[in-house]
Length: 394
Image 1 (cartoon, rainbow, N blue to C red):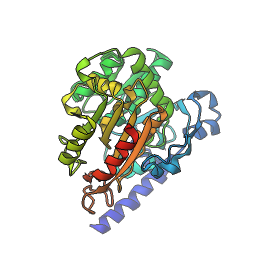
Image 2 (cartoon, rainbow, N blue to C red):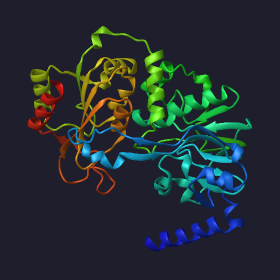
Image 3 (cartoon, one colour):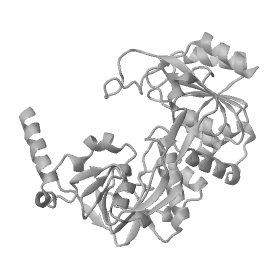
Image 4 (tube, helix red, strand yellow):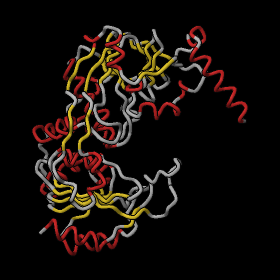
């Protein structure tokens, strides 16, 4: 088996590097580049690059003494890239990943997928000689915006980019996507309605098509730092929209102290949740919610009304973008899987954020990726949490 893999890699490399061989397979890139801006400027095409939001240095206030916030000290002065729209000529776009290849040069633009180079090994066109169905669209100018199925990523990697692109071009450019009503989650449909996005705003790619060729492809960048830390401007944009345009009021969801449970989730739960809930309810007057039981508008309303939220790391904390006032956020984090996305949302909206490290249950990774503990349950130190809540609530 190993010898066949070696032969495959050698032949694949030949097809990528030898021009006449590479042209035989439209979906196989010849090379990769990291920066679309550098590529455009090197080819005297600077006018095809439009900056929507400038790069900035995110200088956080002195919040690193709060609870376990020291774990984010290395993020204190990060430089965030500018958000831009670039015109990169005729491009072949992979529907399943969003990766785009310039048809003429066969250059793959790593920036067109938020995971960049990390994700390349998992995609078909970078490892296979197989031919796939390609659809050449009739619209000369258009974009493609990838739609995933994770609540957090969908808000920042699909929704925000979709709205900004629509603002920039109105209806003059078509927007293609792998999103469709037939395979969409209920919450995705709800969010599009809340943000006043019509289904007619999106051009749907047929299910049997794997790639599309756009004669003049416009790409809108992601703006954050990889998939884990969103750009502050995108956070403020979504928050401002929900504060000014979202007016649902539900007095039954008006609770000041909220605990978000993951007991109905398949993974990443609190092992001692019964004891945790008992303490939160009886000692501090918290209300327990499972976000699966609520429509998106109701989830937004729960977070808008809350003054204190305690939650294990998970997509439900994306709803922080709906908060209309300063609040206190305690995020229960697995000590072996620390992500900064909700730290970034909370601090960008000037909330009081408290990271709270919890023990990872089992030292064995429950994920297929070695040493990745994203799926593991956690055990909460109740005595430690009790002291923190007494401190921040009094």
